[in-house]
Image (cartoon, rainbow, N blue to C red; front, side):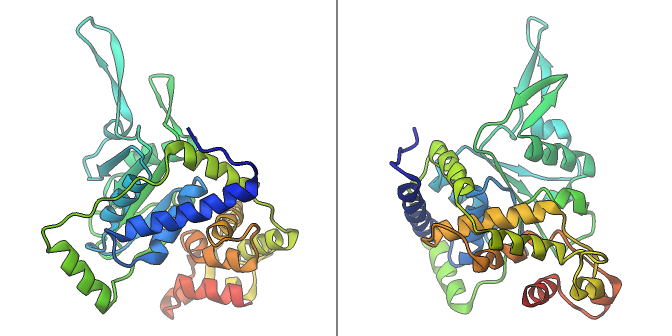
Length: 323
C-alpha cells in the first residue's frame, strides 16, 4: 500500500528524500557511477526503460541487482545469447497431464528485467522483448497477458566487441528513454572497489520503496507543472537535431538523421523528474539540458563527415544546446 500524502508538494518532498535514501543504499555496494545511478532512477520514476552501454567489468549487472533490492521489486536477469528464442523470454503454452494447454510464464513476468548483452541475440528475439517494453503485455496463442507493474527493462551492451552481435536498429533503440554510458572508475574509486570486493563482508541493502510507492511517484512526475517556455525549449532542441527543414546548421553539417517526437516527450518527463529529485517543484531549461545527452544520443545518426572527422554524438548534442 502506497503512503498517502495530503498534497503534491508533500509527495514531491517525499520523492526527493526517497531518492537520496536510494542513493545511500546503492552506494553501499556500487562505488562511484553517480550519474549512472541518477539516470537509472530517473528513468524508473518516469516509467522509462534504459540502455546501459559500457565495457565489461563496470558493475552494470551489480548496479541493476542492487537497485532492484533497494526497490523491493521482483527481479529477473536474462542472458541474451545467439540461440535464445522468443519463447525463452515471454513463455509458451505447454500440455499438462490432462492434455490441456496451459501458459507457462517466461522471465519477462517480473518488475525489473536485466537484458544482459541484448545485442548478442537475433532480431526476432530482440523484437519479442521490445514489443513487451512498448505494450506492457505479451500475446501467446491469441491470449493477451499483462505484465506486472511497475515494469522496467534495463538492457546492457558491450560497445567494443561487435563480432557475432546484432546491433539494435534505430527504431528499436527509440523505445529506450535513456542511453547511458558507463565510464571507467577514477583511481580512488577503483581502490575502494578492490577493497570492498576482496574482503569477506557483504553489505546489506535496505528496501526503500515498494511497487505501489513507485507507481504513485510515476503519476506524481506527470502531474508536475511545467512552464510553456521549458516545453518549447525541449521541442526546439529535438527539432534542431533534424537535418533539412527544421534542423539547425549543426544538424545540417553533422547529422544524417534526427530525433523523433518521442525525444521531446522524454526530455520533458526527464526534466520534471530531475527537478523533483533536486528539491524543485517545477523544471527549468537546465533540467532539460541535464537529461539531453542520454535522451538524444541514441536517437540521432551522424553523417559521413562527422564520422570521418571524429565528431562524437555527445559533442554534437553539446553544440546543439550551445546554439
